[in-house]
Image (cartoon, rainbow, N blue to C red):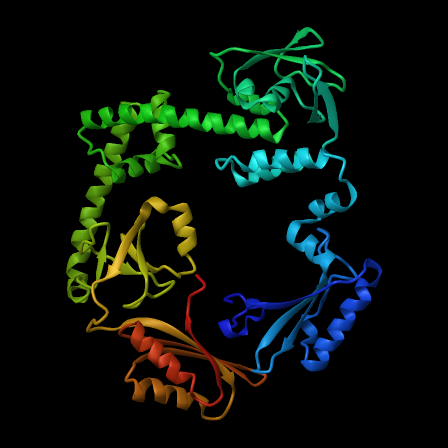
Amino acid sequence: MRKKSIPFEEVYDLFAIRIIIDTEYENEKTECWKVYSIVTDLYRPNPDRLRDWISTPKANGYESLHTTVMGPKGQWVEVQIRTKRMNEIAEKGFAAHWKYKESTSDNGLDQWIQKVRDILSNPEQNALDFLDDFKMNLFSDEVFVFTPKGTLIQLPNGATALDFAFEIHTDIGATCIGAKVNHKLVPLSHRLQNGDQVEIITSSKQTPKEDWLNFVVTAKAKSKIKSSLKEEKRRIAEDGKEILERKMKSLKITYNTDNINKIANFLKFPSSQDLFYNVAKGNIDIKHLKDYLASEKSQESTQNQFTSHINGLVEKIDRKNSDTILIGDDFQKLDYTLAQCCNPIPGDDIFGFLTVNEGIKIHRTSCPNASKLMANYGYRILKAKWASSKIDHSFITGIRILGIDDVGLVNKLTTVISQEFSVNIRSLSITSNEGIFEGNIMVNISNIEQLESLINRLKLVPGVTSVTRYESEH
């Protein structure tokens, strides 16, 4: 909606009417176009919204005829026309449909789908890693090998003895120390050939190693190794957490989440778990913590000088704002500034973001930058709420107005804003192109209720087609 600058009411495919025809395969195309003709005889179609995936099906096998028609109440409605066979493909997937129709005796597809399910059953795996592994298994040729008892095992071309071990069972793969191929001892990285007979040698003391990822090729093996390594890293990190706590206490650094995140950030670790892990591995010692302490004291000294310098300048301005927003888990009264990218006003859902140099900035939860901040800097996000929606001073916000350009339209708009609502206009930007009027107006607003009332009134001005709150693209 933001990208195309359209209101909610102009989103056509909120719902659709699906017409499913029961007909023979050879009559499908003709019957679907007959139904299309009936629908468009009754309701006016939008020619730009016709999608013919019957004549040229999608690459994934999807077949359907889509059109959008004007309903009796002046609303666009999407209509989908397809046959029972097409609907089965759309609902169940092309591979399942092909198996159902063509290959009832062959269970090769069942085995392949089961492998995909095994991969998907591991919630820890990174989505991009999964995609790479999945593609590799999908497009590789296959080799056929045997267990000591003669059971046939199917693996991708290039699979190793370790892949074979994980294919037999996860625990066998995790404890594998070697293998015998055709009764000869081989390393775990040995690549299997068609017809090989493979026997796995295990040890209860063995655990998955990171270098295993360099030679295994099956998605199942990679998934299980990564999952095991991650669990091992978590266990080691728990030990590192206790070690770090002792080191911090010896330097009289308070052990809390805020300081842990600061240390991780100072030492350039992406998360606290990476910090704990490196402490346990001996990569982080007292010297690194002393460097952090010195940096904090230097930064605190600089910050104190800066704060002392600006306090006198901002005290009068911010005095009336001090009780406006409450911040943090216990909702304290802390200093903050309002983010200019989204200009929050009382009544908006908000959050605080702890910046590096500018203190706490308050953003709207619908701010264009909110998702990026939350995803990349979650540890700097602070809870925030308005102390009251009734505040005796105003906030800057923007209103975007679209309409049909007409003489006197600007005067009508400014009259509504300034006289009817007694709202001050801070800035006004107007463009007109081929009879279409667009205005961006920055105004002083007290709260969200006043803004919504103003927007609803502006929509009633003749010639105006839409009024929305303006969000900065920064």
